[in-house]
Length: 114
Image 1 (cartoon, helix red, strand yellow):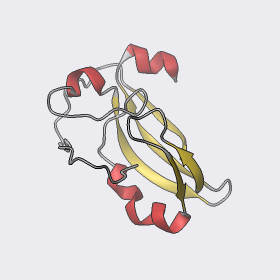
Image 2 (image 1 turned 90 degrees about the horizontal axis):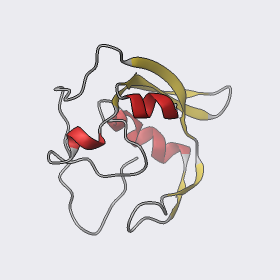
Image 3 (image 1 turned 30 degrees about the horizontal axis):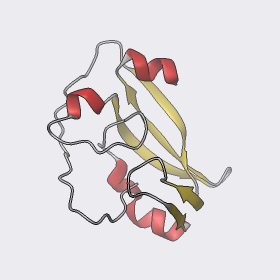
Image 4 (image 1 turned 135 degrees about the vertical axis):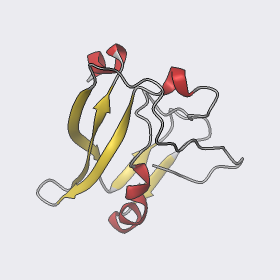
């Protein structure tokens, strides 16, 4: 989820994958639901109210973004260390009220956490 921050941050969006592994594992899981969301584990983060309409407007921007462990900013300089996979698809499931993501997880650390 992209939120406004006080200082501009350079984001990395590229089709090039740095750590694509032969043993990547695909996944399909719940990602986010409308309501109160906490970003307190991220410096400068807080608690946000995210409405479905707000999520609908920006959710497709998640496609192509790296999978990280925790809320970390991914830059060109730290991408090799922080990227553990990639988001390939996002969709809303009316049956459970959640947005789900599909993607691949490339690193053993992330695969163990999943």
